Length: 246
Image 1 (spheres, helix red, strand yellow):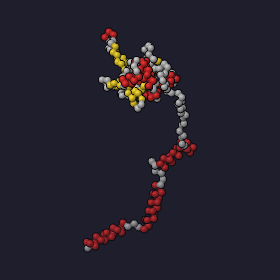
Image 2 (tube, helix red, strand yellow; image 1 turned 180 degrees about the vertical axis):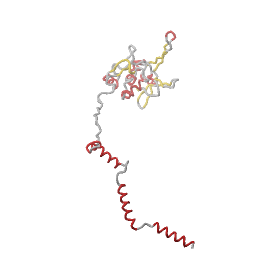
Image 3 (cartoon, helix red, strand yellow; image 1 turned 135 degrees about the vertical axis):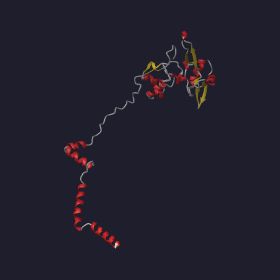
Image 4 (spheres, helix red, strand yellow; image 1 turned 90 degrees about the horizontal axis):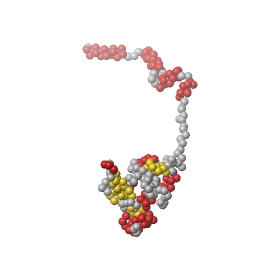
């Protein structure tokens, strides 16, 4: 009895939970109606926002707001290649600091003709000048260098002078070139070298070590280029303010 009672209760429950046939069609209508409502724009969705915008703005205004804005075009003035950055000229007067004659190891190129001029100045033979003061590198001659206590490499003709100050002032150090009057073309064209003139940044970087740059004698563009492109000793080259120095 107990078993049959449980089974009959289960059957009654299943029969009571079964959906009557006349409920199914209205339920489907409700479902279709629900899905139809779900296809309307939902608040926060893109379609809902667009619909609200159309209500807020007239079609003409809405179209204007969505129109593509063309970027502004400005004409860029190209730099005149014929005018270098130093078109107003540059200043230089040698301060005899000697910084351009020392530093890391390098080369001070000297031509055969300049060796003859140097020999006449020193009252030596050209062969003796080459033997004492020059080294040959790939068929070219360069002046010797000597390493000093600071670790720098000085040109062999760089001479250091200590000038005692007056009335207890500090001693001044002046470094000069012993062959300044017959110095090679490489030295005569400093600081108007191509690498220094390449940009204002390069020029100012070199001026940090050379105290004569950006002060003293004014050189025009024509004078600067004449020195830069010189193949032999130029007329009136950059020099110091000391008399009889050329």
